Length: 65
Image (cartoon, one colour):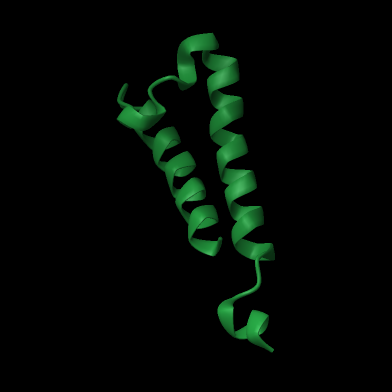
């Protein structure tokens, strides 16, 4: 689960950076279909939810204890 959160946050940050260069990840190309405001909300949501998953999911060592 930790890796899923990390990937979500990385894709969200990467999507923001690429948006400044008028580029986009192919898997996230649908984000701006509903307008730029919704696109930015989805990008920020990816970062927030991904970071929350990554921070609040216990590591394998903690889960085994």
